[in-house]
Length: 537
Image 1 (cartoon, rainbow, N blue to C red):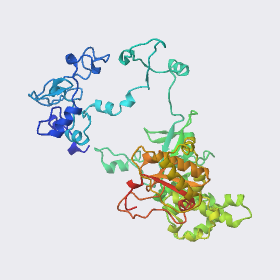
Image 2: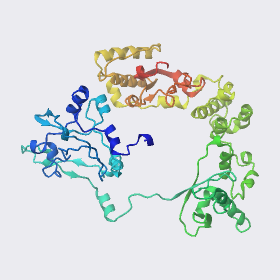
Image 3: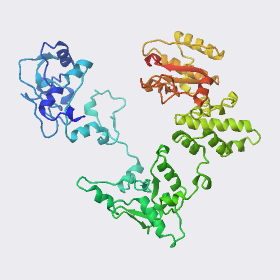
Image 4: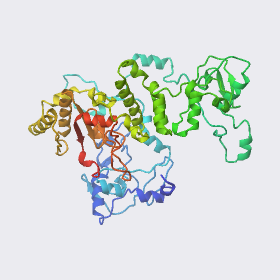
């Protein structure tokens, strides 16, 4: 919470939490409190109530009701305050007994009046709050409630008396615990290696330190990367061993105290991971690229002497070239495409050695799919002409293949034979249009629980059994999870519909992209909760 909204004293507690019966003038709130927020009666008024039967209660209410009267709210050591419960003449008859403020469960007036249900609100400002929020972390292993009884005996069921708490421990786990073996470990250790440009490393500065002195301190500005260069300089004539930056931790260990590398004497394996650098960072991204290919560089300048693109073949993969297009748009995209086309089409030329047209179509599709995954398309870089002449038969994109291979759950197949008359009528009408490839739009209306999702599952199974593509979608994620292969319709899912009201309402679906090809090949689109979508879309 923001500082201005925090509850710092007991007077603030009364603004949000009340433990008193509202006055008769506030009819709706008083009705809600008396209906939902009155505990008991228990104690001597009703010793048989459930809160009195808990094994730790010892003849008292386990929630400590009735509470004591209090003229004002006070805070105590366990973090839960004693709320204001003034002694007044106001009371109400609840479950046959006259109850006053001592029996009121703490509540928030606004929330209780809004939702009209049991809504207990407490103020907690100590470690108890953390334990309450994360109680499932502290509760221990999962447990079950069970009872053993004779099969023929007729017994009075008393769940409180018969309750047993236990956890199943297998023989393997028991022996593991007895011998004290570790239950988890991280092996081998992983060391993140920083990547930075010259004089752009991160330095930690304490509040009392002088910035100029810290920057001029040779020890403070050392990093694993700068010391990596230094070791390579020192070993230039001493050894023939040459390592990549990512291989260095296998042979040297980093001492954080004096900030330098030492030759590793033991055989402990430490895996190095170069920190992630986005291609949009430009020079730092290319520095990471060079460090992954150049062995034992002596300095930043030494790295620049290698023609990485040609000698090290750093840009031979489709992903690498697409990264350049997406994050660092080239000045001449057509020339770059022509230059690396042979390398990009190598896999397809192996599969189709005598069909240059098919190779070109498949290469363009693969390249286009990489760009779409990054939110771009061929038209963005003036390369739309590459896909304009493609044969639609060859456009079996990954999305289309996945849709045709989508599983058909058995329970959905069974739905087809158990539809009621109204569901069957809708089912037959829609399936007829799918079989005959006729266009149509249908709106299925009905209250919750009338079997709309059941009908959608039947339609999904029928269309998939026909060998056709069906796209099950929904406006909300919960509804989408109820249909096989369901997806939401918003910007990061099926139809790329924008969520932000300030952006253009057109969907970000490239005309020649794989998603467009999937929609063209689809026979049926199921859109659950369509009426809940933005009317602008």
